[in-house]
Length: 371
Length: 102
Image 1: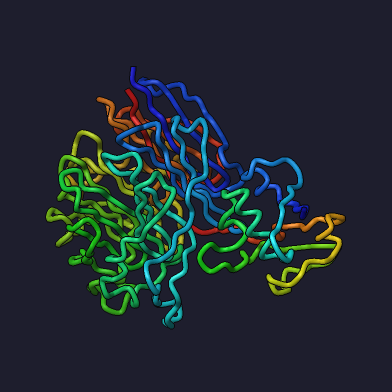
Image 2 (image 1 turned 90 degrees about the vertical axis):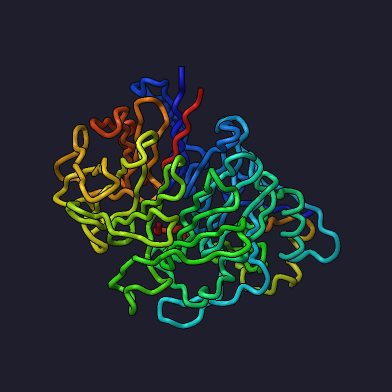
């Protein structure tokens, strides 16, 4: 029988939640790396027992941990992230040039085919790759070398590269997103990148339709349709049907189109999920009701999913990497909150249960569907 | 042999229980002790000082003989009592730091 393994990164450690295919009874393992912030953990699609984890804190900096046994044991691997060449400057909050400085790893994206190859999205924004299981890291300098880098500015959370999507149909194509620069794409394996932000409109920047400067919060793709992208921008839910060349707003009837996370159903490429958040100054759901919204039409028409979710006095947030879907026949969907709950649905969002209630604030949730 | 006491989180990371001892080639300084420490415990690389710039992490401090020597030059000689092993060099995580972002 299949097994589901959730990799949960929190403000104070990592937790691994496992269940059989019924997804009713869960075993909780952790905290791993107790006391440290775990921005992200992700398993290799090529070898599910290989898991990478980003461990950091304000005292002792960044570590990368690697497991080769599904998260039972871990070993620290390389944590030297040296920018390629002279790092140069980007814009600081006050508009002055500020040197590029490594701060932390926000996202780890293992290769689809090689367990020893993994990409890291870091703050200050850059894309790194390791091809030796995380022992050593090299920047893909084409991203910062695009030319717009000196004009990138950090968002409130820092200038982070938080989203990395590998195209399963084209090994040379990678999508990335940066707060607050926007989305970028390479078609040559990372040698060069170009911004893919046409159609985005952001009222909080001087030119609302600028080529770069948009605060993209997260991007999702269904592997069967790698040219179709869905985006939760700071405000606005967007979609692209041409690999990011152009974007159209699909916020439709959402009660608010601010939010952080977005994901796609495992078997229905037009079924997408968001968690609307009240506003950029009020990072909690509207009216104290935690509602996932689902669109079965690729956007525009949305329905609230509330069964099993708190509908009174709920003021948690759901962060950008804190939602994931499994690939069982009845698609499971999971998300974590800043209140320490991880909710799961075994029926594509129709009903929900809290798998755990009282973890530290959840930063990320990834899921592995194991045979 | 230089005795070094690590903060609890770094002991956990290095998988050591109490103080550690390192041998330093040449003059004993904060810099040479850190080099010896990182050579023996590679998992500590980057945790005490930045690997690229070599700068001490802002919330890590160095104490010796009841003195805060954090702001002395990294290549300044350590007190004789530390060099002889009578006193340890303490690496301390300041009561500050952390990160509230994301």
